[in-house]
Image (cartoon, rainbow, N blue to C red; front, side):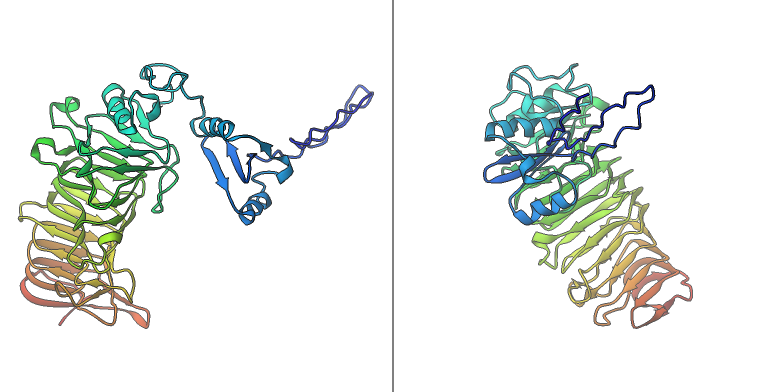
Length: 451
């Protein structure tokens, strides 16, 4: 009986079958490395469908991957040319072949590519990615997937997003470092324009971004400023990151949801978000917001809640150094902002916010289990400054930089505080300091010390 010759690529071992009625247990096979190693001189690449395709340039990185058993030794590499590599890359990232006729009839209804609920941007007609995106938005209700690295130059004409459209990546939730699925926008003014309100799904209700990193350029707004005529209705961001924009959104919102641990960084304008309207759930799975580009402007504010009501904000981590983290403004009738576990702080003890990290000039907000850290003298007084409106602080924590306080400085409005602590690494937690220059302080408990 002849023993089969092992295939060196798959590294499988074989045992002959004994000449008896009961064959012995087979010899276990060596597990094949999960990724195919490619060689396009002078670089090595590993590829694995679906969704993984990474090029490595350095020998140290190659050796690290080999040690981790991501791929085999160099001599197992399949040598290919650039054209073949591009085909393999396409298969890896898509999981299915590209359309035979790019620019032809897009696979909008039916077919293997849309059976999973999404279509690829470059399968739609158009001379540029911006043209393809306009055509995709006007012709499909499937999620539209630009390939990572796509550059979409909208010129001076933003992409109009109507109801039920979704732009998505396939790389999972994104992080603050441009993630696994970055898509780059260029242009003047804004990248996206919200469609008019219309009637229910005949207008702009319910479009979204999912698991994608949108990268802009300084001075370019991500979503053009909206008004009552085209307010953002039931917009959804999930698992996204937004990098290098003038601002992300500005204007009235209704039923907006931001989840999936979203990140925002490198904002060049005077704010990143300005929310108006009501009925929203924002950053409910957390996330990080760091001003970055305009962070050296002490008069900038990461998030402005202007006339915003009946909405919840989750455990977002906001860094303002020296920018302000949050500003809340509006009349007393704009009630019902609730912050749950939100962190507002200067970058650290040595890089503080130039004034209060939170300013309340109007409206109404409740802060539950929130943290306010690291301010210095600047645009206003205290780590939290209340000059109007209404604010409740329940079970919150404060940290000082260079012993700068007080924790709350009130010159107007109505405030109540309970269960507060000042955290100091040099001594046990203690009362916070509260300074009243005006306004009304409702009965505070023993965790507040008047100064």
